[in-house]
Length: 82
Length: 82
Image 1 (cartoon, each protein chain N blue to C red):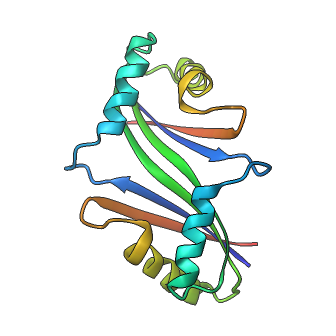
Image 2 (cartoon, one colour):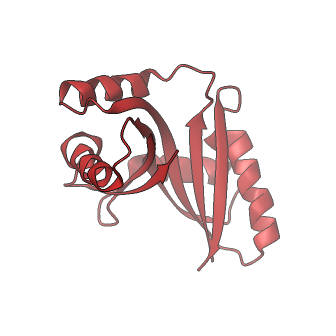
């Protein structure tokens, strides 16, 4: 069993309206030290496999094909044996 | 400047319909080895402060008050000096 942790973030050059909304809320709640907020996704995926190299290839394919919109999003992931 | 990375995840005991939807999609795309998917949020927050202890307290307050719904979500965060 391999556990993949996938992080999907909006590219730096792309506007992040959700991040701006969170930032505005934090400011109005008194957290004035907040300079910038970016919101992304975090996925935990359990894979029924033991082949780490194969898992890496498969998770990359999942990211490219479904989990991330690579036009506006970056992704990175870590694998962890269970 | 301190950079906080906040991870908000749905508690293990709570249903995750978004995770199930992603899992079903991955299965129908041929990724049959996927056993479970949980979807959470990942936030990057830039703080205009240099006091690490104070930053830790403030980020915890942000999580408790806005970023996480602690009834159904867990959170954890890391701080990184810039």
